[in-house]
Length: 247
Image (cartoon, rainbow, N blue to C red; front, side, top):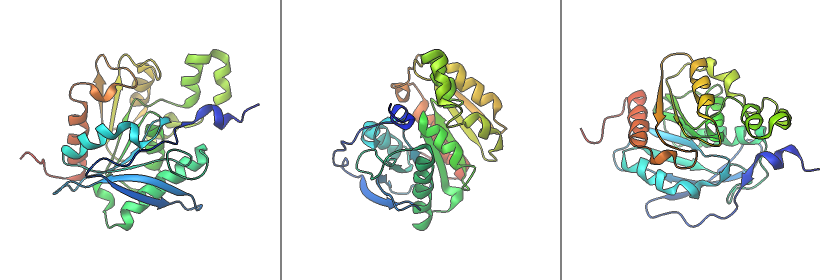
């Protein structure tokens, strides 16, 4: 029988060279795993997103979003979890948490203040970002298409078999402990992580918080929702005190 981790994580090892203007970086975790990352730093940007991606694929799958956020005046560090893309190792829940901590620590080591950093995650990466915010200081958390816990998602798709997932990636149990501004967004036609799970997660969070309903958006096309990228960028600038690049 396959170990449960092999049924949870779906890494893609193929990563092309980064797009023009994107720097390739390497990060070492506290347990010695070498992670691959892409970084973009547009002129004049002061707010930084530490981006934890979704479960399937790797950082290359959202290269267009990375560039779009940079075009909106944000620094972005997008890293691959262990076992994804060119990163070493094999993914586990505990391991990807260490990966997120290493990505954050790498930005701090480069001199980026904690109050200029926003933890940003999509789907599984939202759960990773919420957990990271309970272990590292930041200016805020932005999560898109994120679930309450993995078991709730699994039960929607597999019925009683979903119980095997337990309460892994338990954002619902952590989110009320956040003490920074929170931005949650969810597609109201999400076929992977049901919209009501996003609503439930938002309801459990403390203020200050805001919710963006991505109308007509599914799980994988959510970033195409009208106004979502602009809203993420505006939130990041607001909570870090960064100037609007268009002002």
